[in-house]
Image 1: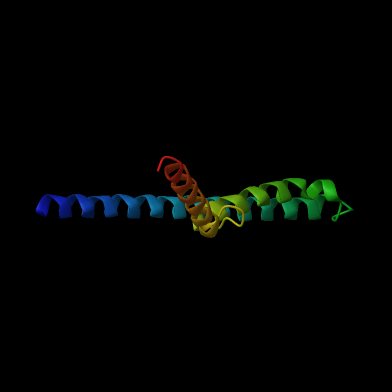
Image 2: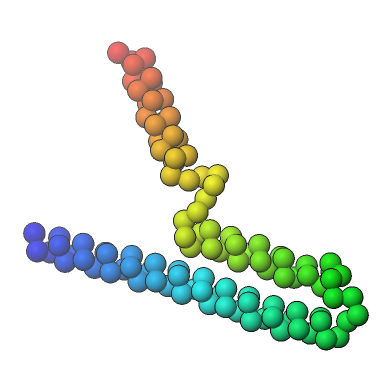
Length: 105
C-alpha cells in the first residue's frame, strides 16, 4: 500500500511540474511577444510617415494568433472540442457498443 501511495505522489509531482513548465512556457512566449512588438511599433512610428499602414501590423497579428492558440492550449480552452463534446462522444460510443451487443442477444 505504501508503494502505491508513493507512486501516486510521484505521479502528482510529475503532473504538477509539467503544468508549471507549460505555464512558464506560455508566459515567456507572451513576454517575448509584447517586448518585441513594442520595439517594432516604436520603430514603425519613428521611421514611417504612415503609422497605420496594414502591412506593418501583419507580423503582430500573425504572432498574436499564435499566442492566442498557445494560451488556449495552456489554459485548456477549446470551444470546438471541450469537455461537453468529449462526454457526448464517449456516450455515443457506449450507446453504439450497447446496440452491437444487443444484436448478439
